[in-house]
Every structure is written in structure tokens, then in C-alpha cells.
Length: 146
Image (cartoon, rainbow, N blue to C red; front, side):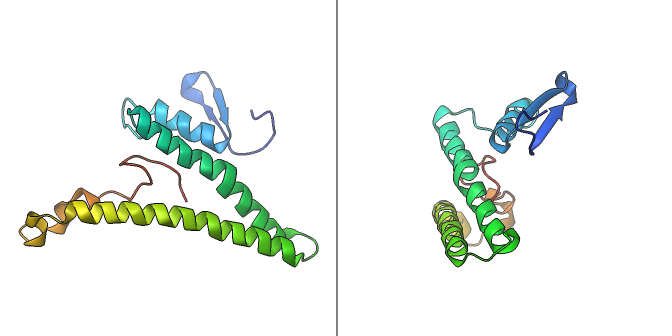
């Protein structure tokens, strides 16, 4: 299924047992496959590029560094403090980038909600789309699971 003999990998039995492997490729495949019934991926080219940037950030930065940090902290036969510190620091830096983006999105949402209708309390906050949907990294579409 996966020429690299690793996970993740999926087989789409509804499409001739088509195999898709690597996390980024799987996410894009599932988003594009479900686009007709339940759009998870943007139709906008610019928004797609932003989504893809976060997707590849996860695949090339987030996942490998977490793997290394976990390996050197819990599974390496001998404790190497410099490796533990290096990869743990990098994981913290990577999460700080994500936290910064989520904080920006939160501020944008608060600014959009700060209109007369909500500030006067004439509408329940539960009517707002912001409390029914998760906070995405880009727009109102699925991006990277953190």
C-alpha cells in the first residue's frame, strides 16, 4: 500500500481500492473527495494556498519534531540531554507559531462580533456562528489538526 511501508495510509474501497499514503496527501484526498457532499476545503485559490501552508507546516515541521522529542525523551536507550532539550525547544517554538495564529483568529472573531447587536445583548451568543464552529487556522475550513 505505502511504498515506504509506514503509516499513515488508507485504501479507498469506493474508488477501485485506491491507496493514498502520507498524512498531507491523505488529508487533501479526503477533502477533495468529500467536496461535493460536505465541502471541507476552500474553493478559493488564495485560501487553499494558506490551508496548504499550514498542512505542510504540520507535515514538515510539527510531526517530525514531535517524533524526535518523544523518541529522545522516552525511547532512546540512553538519555542525551542535549537532544531532549533541542527537540523539546523546537516543539515549543512550533506550538508557539500555531498559538500565535489561533490568537490572531480569535481577535478577528471578537472584532467581527463586536457590533451593536451583540454588545446590546439583543441576541443570544449561541446564535453566532463562532460558538457553533471550531476555530480554524484559515477561514472556516478544516486545516491542520494540532
